[in-house]
Amino acid sequence: MVTRLNPYLTFNGEARQAMEFYKEVFGGNLTLNSYGDFGQADAPNADKIMHGMLETTSGFTLMGADNPPGMESAPGDPFSVSLSGDDDAELRGYWEKLSENGSVSVPLEKQMWGDEFGMCTDRFGTPWMVNIGRPES
Image (tube, rainbow, N blue to C red; front, side, top):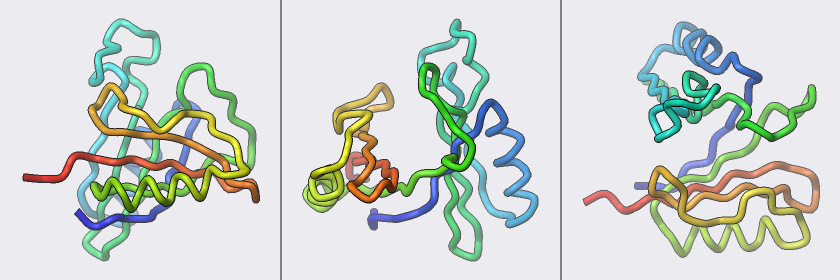
């Protein structure tokens, strides 16, 4: 898988509606995964979107999710820049450089969906998400 860079939008409980709207606008294939899909079926946010991805025939990729429980969201900052792929060395290198002299809100480590994932804000205030998947066989 090629490493991709794309916007990642955060919503306050409206990710499903927003991502479905963007699919109407841009077309393409929309995948939505709720918190319940990842083992939190009894949680109050089980129906909220943990990760959504729209891939269009024009080559656009837009990702989005509902704000995770316990994380604050302020108007004007509902986005991150997402780096994802399966090249461990390449993505770790980006993570190390982006997080240096910045702040880490989620350490880059294995997550419940099986990938390594982390969130940081670089020294210039730009929020980043890095997801290292397993190489496809």
